Image (cartoon, rainbow, N blue to C red; front, side, top):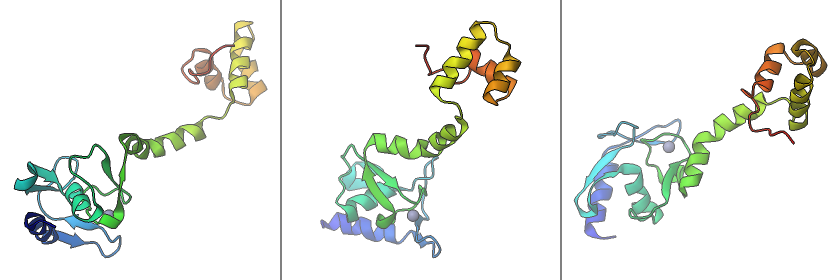
Amino acid sequence: MPWYESQLEKKILNRRLINEETGCWLWTGGKDGAGYGKVWCPYHGGQQSVHRVAAMLWMGYSLSDELFVLHQCNNPSCFNPEHMYVGTPQENMDDRSKVGNQYRREQRKLDDEAVRTIRALHSEGVKGKDIAELFKVSKKTVSYIVNHKTYADVGED
Ligand SMILES: [Zn+2]
C-alpha cells in the first residue's frame, strides 16, 4: 500500500463510529445530501466518497471503475467493507426498486386473460356491475381496467 493510502486509511479509521448492534462503521465526518461520507483525497483527484475509498483500500476496488460500490446494510454513511459489494449500475437500480416491484406484484390479482375478457365484455355492452360480480372484484377495479388506468401493459389480442 503506497504511503498516501496508509495515511488515508488512518484518516478514515479516525472518523469511524462502530454501531455495536448492526456492525456498521459510521462516518463521523462531512457527508453529502444523500448521506454518503466525504473525504478529501489529494492523491485521488480531490473529494471522494468514503465508502468508495474504503472499497479501494480493503476490497481491491479502483476509484476509476465504472462499477458501483453498494451497501448490503442500506446505510449510505457505512464504510465497513463486510457490508459492501461491488455491482453494476443495473444491480444498483434493481436494489432500489426491489421493494416497489414486490408491492406491485401483490397488487396484481387478475391474470392477462381475465383482463382481456373484462375489456371484451365491456365493449359488448355488459354492465360494469355484472362484470365485477363475475370476477369477484369491485366496480371501480372494472372501470380502471376498461379505461386502461390499470393493467395498461396487457394488450388486446
Ligand atoms: Zn453497514
